[in-house]
Image (cartoon, rainbow, N blue to C red; front, side, top):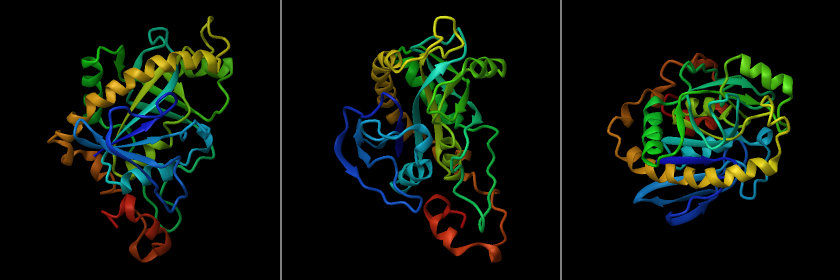
Length: 285
């Protein structure tokens, strides 16, 4: 089952049938919103607006653990995360979609793991997104004739403010390609929950390093978002059948990310935390 996490500009999915908004209680608190469950092109799909309907929640206050838990509890196996970003490269102009394959984490103070004292786990994050799912994203973007690039490093900043000029220049020097505020710890939590996760970054601006973009404004970003959102919806429609009919999906390594991640001895495990982990990690617990 495919799940879509909609970022800035993507707050709904037209074309869904048999829809209902589902309230999800999680042991990590409430998710950003109810989850819109329905069918698209005959296939089941779940949609969660990352910032809530009406864009109520800032990136540093999103309950990422609750969001991932809610999707998994509804049977989601594959997640497409869509987000708006600034570009750190001249050859990635506004309107370009980047199929992200790496992250640099500059967030702080966000709950970044389902595990903790009483049940410790360390998942591998060398390849933080699902290559199989990325193939489907790329194929769908090509079919829709959307300007895109496969591969790119996403710098996740804390926000909610935009970058200083010095920060923007630093991140360019590090070799990062785009900058945003939301894909971490989201990608890490998806890996812990053994969900296949792909991230599509929609470029809205050049960030403040560019001589013509020294002041990034919400108004300017929204204008590009409106154009990008239509293409993002085409992307989702194109992916649904591919994901549902992917015979290789059950064997994907993402779905066994916890096989060798648990380290706490069974006798030392906290039963309260184990109960909270039943949905995301029940397969190995």
